[in-house]
Length: 374
Image 1 (tube, rainbow, N blue to C red):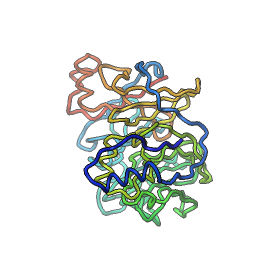
Image 2: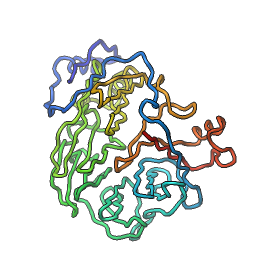
Image 3: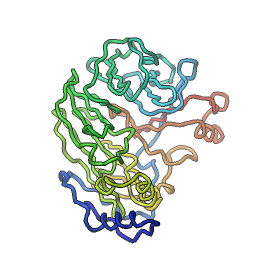
Image 4: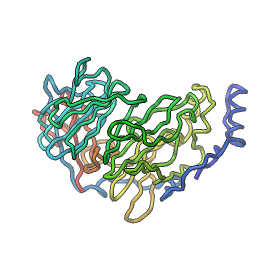
């Protein structure tokens, strides 16, 4: 349910004050599909939350470090049989394949360059288990296909630029950040457009791109976008429906609130408002979001068995291992495993506590994938 921004905001310019009056009194109320379930995220629990209530144990997969497998950050993980595919988009600019049990390095999918099977910019990837293919989105509009063992097969050009891709059931799902395009496109295997949704022009100049807008399903995807307090389900036919709606209470910003704002004013509002769902994951037993309210980070957890939602202060939430922050577990790109990524600071803490072997792990190690077990 949408709520108007309440309270008085003291600003230094008449322009901003007039804008705030407009948001509280005259801003339009957009029509959104009715969701299957509405999360009431307005009441914060005084209790803490321990990840052990969901997962009983964990498995660590140290990713082998060598001259061909140096990873700076992990942006996406997909498990396929005995393999784990890891994308480092910004630093190493590659999709790396490791053994899913011991983390030994196997190969890299594609490489940086101008030849066949090479790219200048890496954006995303998805895996087609049936065809045993890896689809790599690169250069803002090219989809390259590789075999699971890294052999280049073919590439096709999109009729629009894209920043994210997911594959499911003979359909591709793309997100584009261009203001003159729709945000979500669904295509067939030949990249012919079948459906599109949500014009980016709705944001004016203030569209923001989400790093992980998709979560893959067996038949379709879950999809979200900036300042839209819904999670949408897109089925294998490209039909869109609202799965979840989030009521974050007074102070939430909506797309129509920011459409005509200068960027400097948007920054002022987002620094003090409940303005964005920064994280979302959906599993068979629970779903989880991270959002801000008055500069405080909050986590809402939907227990599907009990059919209720509880909100916790992120700072009070507990990890399942060591003296680490709560991890916000992600689900891999095929929706089978919940995981978190351990970087050098986390690794150093676990070495100090004796959880990791000090002779094996150091700050120079590759990241470690921590897989949670129910």
